Image 1 (cartoon, helix red, strand yellow):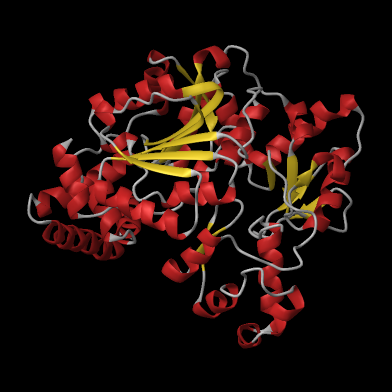
Image 2 (cartoon, one colour):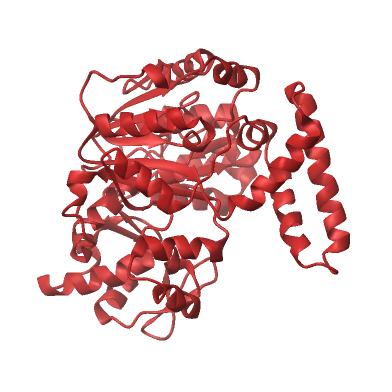
Length: 480
């Protein structure tokens, strides 16, 4: 592990927020599959390879009744994260410097375990150790979220990795990065000239352009590291099973990748196999998928796990779908129109449209008979899988706060990074004018006073109101 630690000390990894690690999302998906996952409010969370803890700190700030523990190999990153957490006044997070090979947690088990940006970039022995730690530390009803590089999409990336490492050799990090970027740039530019003659060149060119868009830290560690080890979904699932862990779903495609395919293509994939995992593996060829975010549970919990559509009744719903003139038609802001055949679901979505994304208990949007919920839930799950509605274990406050305030962690992010993290665990980079206005959200001013302040006037009254409404509807404002 000494070489790995030195590598990350020489080029610190870029800290960022990973929306798919949201403990509310993993808990919601688990509930929909019959796993009694506890709410993200008040649970115990472990993140392995947490870096400086930005992702985990955002979770801790949003769920103050939860207890979060992060582990990382590099002491400098842990020190940085501790200082940030202290400045934000976070008392529910602990960051520990530890070697994964020696990490043994003596305390209570965890309701959520997060492993992001680690699994595919360490040797096989450490991959096995990750599975061992997850199996030992995951509580009954708990969910582990592990991202990993996946084939067949990464076959193309491996070719580009070969090109970059062939050119860059074993020099200093900045020399290797410069040489790798030069190789990618040449490929992208030459590919533009040759794409009209050879269509396959376009795929290489597009992938080179995507890698050129990465920061130096991400390109160095993700693409030029000594370990770069994608695997097929089915291989990952089998390896997890050897350690007593079962694959429940993917955080990004909880209903299977086929939900995101065009209907005719999805039908062909569905006919491929009766096994959902085999269909997902096949769909990865059609989507050129390079990264998966697996949700794992204990094997004994998976024995009785099954898709339970009626479970949506116990969740909250948020929807940006807006009704069309046709009573069954709805429009999503990203430009997609859908038709809903189920009358109860159409009624529910029309009611929820007034919330403009606000997540409220399902019963507030629809009063339906007990026997209607399996049918309603099946349709809602399909919309959730297509990212057309939001389902959650937690609920947003029904009324905007009289004195809008961001929690201290988000105010710190505004000052340090000109960004904040929404209540849905989405990073939100912001222009300078909006940052200046949002810094005033400390709870000292009433809403009307905020809209009259100088920063709001410079930004524009309409945009200031929109920002306050968006932050409230995304659960980003303190409720006090």
